[in-house]
Length: 169
Image (cartoon, rainbow, N blue to C red):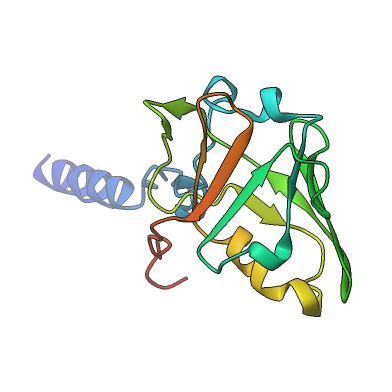
């Protein structure tokens, strides 16, 4: 009888030892750190779509650009729809077109409620030589504000926060 119990005990131990562990499906780290999507009700994209903003590239400084509704200025920023923009540069020595997408956040107490490092413009067209500085500026972290009447837009260089990095990727 003792031999049977010992044999059953040994058999049960080997059976339990060979049982598969349950695999817990892990979500890839890349999906966990996806880019934060700004809710539509926090964006000005719907309000800005179809609007035109004028500026003069000659008056652009590397940290700020001011746009308004003055049609006598040669360069134009078009918000084509609620997602895409286009900039026409019409300078004497530079004719260029910049295209891309945008996400501009709504105002709060006279300034935009921008998370640190927010990049409102994503340029999809290739950089052209005469507008490399402007394209680089627009691709960076920016603070965008409007005056009280909404007819002047001021785009300033914002605070840049380094991207989140994942060890081993």
